[in-house]
Image (cartoon, rainbow, N blue to C red):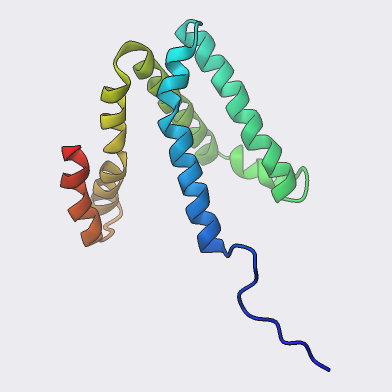
Length: 145
């Protein structure tokens, strides 16, 4: 006797999991202004602790997702392009936290909300990628908020 299983199992598929993860990331990022305002340390101490915990929270899942410690995994990070990307990410995170310390959370959120559209513009200019019409429609709507 053969048991037929449906193509759709009771667990989430990849698309649904991606939607949930994006929603959780949105909640986490939207609360970062509140967390920054609650800190009682100076800016550089906050950057150091945020970097430490950010690194740990990226390192720990890599052990589980990649099947343990892998030199192949680290070789990609230690290439010049990986080091440049790490330096850019570090600089951006320090600027983001510095902005939260020096201006209102609303100003930072409005400027940060333009990031996807700036990325679309750079993709169009540098990579010759076609900008989706929905992105062009969303840009003026999101900047109006």
